[in-house]
Length: 285
Image (cartoon, rainbow, N blue to C red; front, side):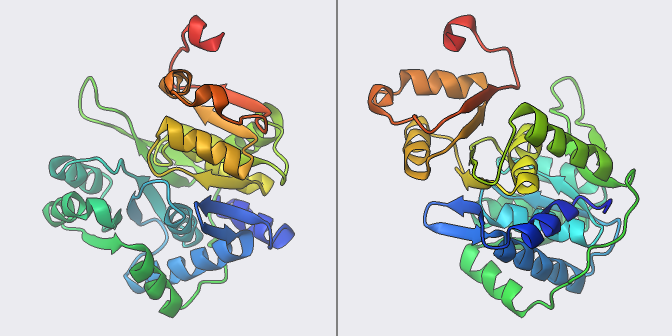
């Protein structure tokens, strides 16, 4: 299957009862995640989204992120992940530039998303867990996964814009699936028994590919942190017996400087990966 959404449907068929994503006391199995994505596809379709349409996703690391992500892909739509800390002017650009007609925004950041959507002529759907679950429950599910070509655009990720206007990088279904499989099979050797700490933002390529998509491909569990905090991360590592941690150098530095790090139980970890920047030698040691 060329569609990147096939990562989820394939794993849901093979491991329906295994936990897929977790946020503290909330856990979705692969069956539940796949069903929620199917209902989300129906919700999006009812709001006029069809294959090739751009959909903004302005969500933190919460279970609703993969639900919306794979729901939009299921329709053949193109996902435009957006940093939840974007301001009004920025959200307007991130919607207007790719011609997105709809953005799904986390309730805590809805003001900037709504203002940007208004300026871009787009619709803003606020995602609050209970209300969003109610919307999904009454949406007609889309059982099938849209047929796409492997070189069709799946995701548009924007560059940082540090030297000019951000540019949308169009990533294809084939490219993203290949990256997820290579990460899971070669870099981390994921199995369904693995527990991956979802501390990297999922709107960024690192967290999206190496954590979420690779975990979904392998049938592993992604346990989420909506916002990185070293103390909370160490707590989750111990609580959920996390086996894989992926982070940027500042996260590793935060661990080393946390007052509770010496007593933290990190014995479940089998591999840690640093990316995004060069890690200082002393931090590495």
